[in-house]
Image 1 (cartoon, rainbow, N blue to C red):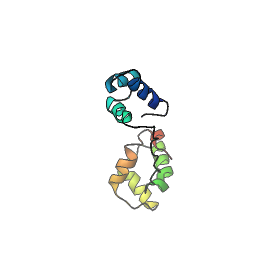
Image 2: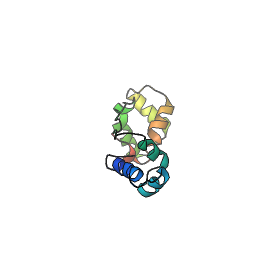
Image 3: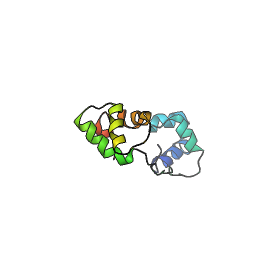
Image 4: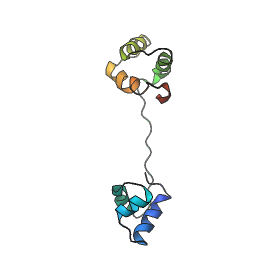
Length: 110
């Protein structure tokens, strides 16, 4: 990712030193295609930030974390337990959004 400090370096290497995008990339680190893209820009444009979408699992994250901290529950077991708490969605959503990303409980951002 290009930041406000790296953009003028890319421009300077190209305009003042005459380096090609591949050479600039080797020198500064970003991918050559990224360098090419930013060389076409007249000025730095910060990346747009997007609001985090809420998940249907958000209200149950604390329960899921507690379950995973105490035992190595399967997706089916977690689904059964949070359905008792009012969750209404498919098992696959739990497998994708919870189990794979929470095998280490610290990876589950609350």
